[in-house]
Amino acid sequence: QVQLVESGGGLVQAGGSLRLSCAASGSIFSINAMGWYRQAPGKQRELVARITRGGGSTNYADSVKGRFTISRDNAKNTVYLQMNSLKPEDTAVYYCNRYGSSWRAYSYWGQGTQVTVSS
Image (cartoon, rainbow, N blue to C red; front, side, top):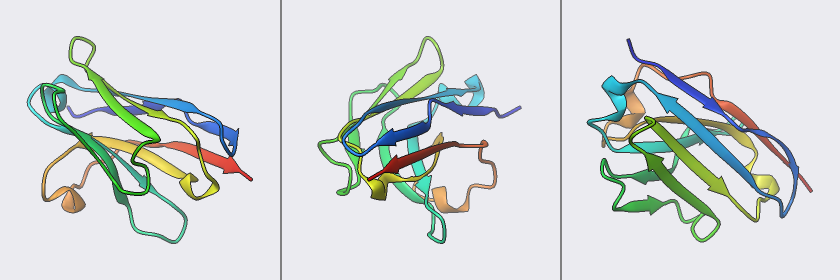
């Protein structure tokens, strides 16, 4: 059974930091690249960051490059997103999931974790 449990969100002032965590079931985690995604009200879900299966390569959306860092702990089946210098436009529900070119078609998503950045 697939499980994705995101946590670590909250309310923070602009310029602040948060660290998100995602505990994923082994069936998803061990064989896949993983990604963090977000969806703001009235907007489509977007890919924020992704990391390869072994953790050796990462990629970021231009809007978060230099501020966010994705990492993973394969022993714990957990992926993290360190978010620094947060901006109000980072406000969204953040989700993790496996990463693939067809990610927009994935049917299963966890509950996400709300990040709200106040100005």
